[in-house]
Length: 215
Ligand code: G3P
Image 1 (cartoon, rainbow, N blue to C red):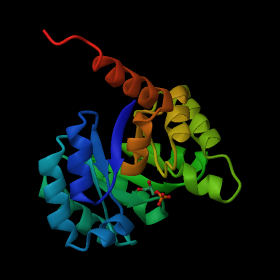
Image 2 (cartoon, rainbow, N blue to C red; image 1 turned 30 degrees about the horizontal axis):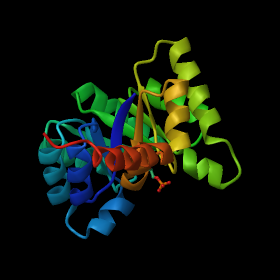
Image 3 (cartoon, rainbow, N blue to C red; image 1 turned 45 degrees about the horizontal axis):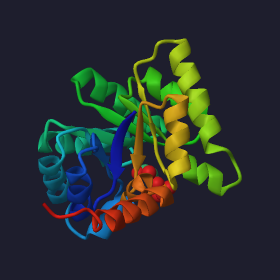
């Protein structure tokens, strides 16, 4: 499973990248608002840090506006993936982007029929938001299973990009189900590394190392 970082913070993206496990980046308007800089500047800088797909989201909600914004974003760097909301006008734009060779990430997916429609429009990635489904009492990971099954049934090429990940269990379940990608916030990436027995074991090794005679 590929690991993307879900962030608009170039410092944490740089830090995660230095761990050697980051395959790409996803952003959204909420994350970029926190960055407090123009979208184009941040996306260009991210593309210089991570050599992999970098999702940048359009703000327009009509097809012509989405196409205009998406083409501008795609010009920033060959690795830019245009992120498009899962609405009727969005899917019309996805079909055109696909025909033009521009990669897309269809976002705000909350059902398997939505995911099937996005794949039929030619989406490169589909982003189901598992945490937000859990927030309203649903089962986000069940949706990932449904989408993976449907895409497998029909050999659809769209990659399942599990998004809105809140904790390591989401990441683990996504990998077990066979999600192609998980996009994970920096704090959860750090949690993926943590285990109390690792800390305890390391403390013991360091303590015992002091007893080794110096040559
Ligand atoms: O980038 C999309 C998604 O990962 C957002 O997550 O935590 O705002 O639901 P969240």
